[in-house]
Image 1 (cartoon, helix red, strand yellow):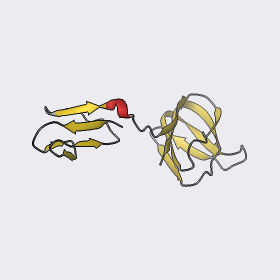
Image 2 (cartoon, one colour; image 1 turned 45 degrees about the vertical axis):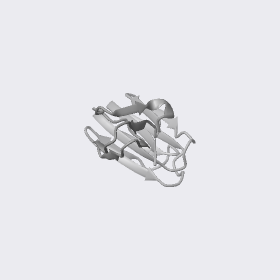
Image 3 (tube, rainbow, N blue to C red; image 1 turned 120 degrees about the vertical axis):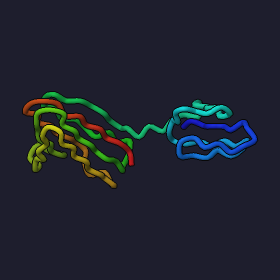
Length: 130
């Protein structure tokens, strides 16, 4: 997470934040167009919520990493179509077609593996901590 410090004697607004005179704030995003008087220290680290990101163009089976018990899975089909199954091959399939997005929020760990069957095209999968 970057830390921003105001070295002036006046409050400065940057993005949706206000940094008081001679104050510092640490936030979970990098701000663009930093005005004079504000310094950025990115050595504090950065919070990365992405657990997994992948692009598949053919049938694939993969595990949901165990790094978080609360997560959101997002599928986006940029072209073609396919089906999505969770945890085992006999599960009910979800259809996804070109331009469609499917989002599933898991507040507890209920999905351990994902089975994509792609007829044609590309499906992007992102798993993010929530």
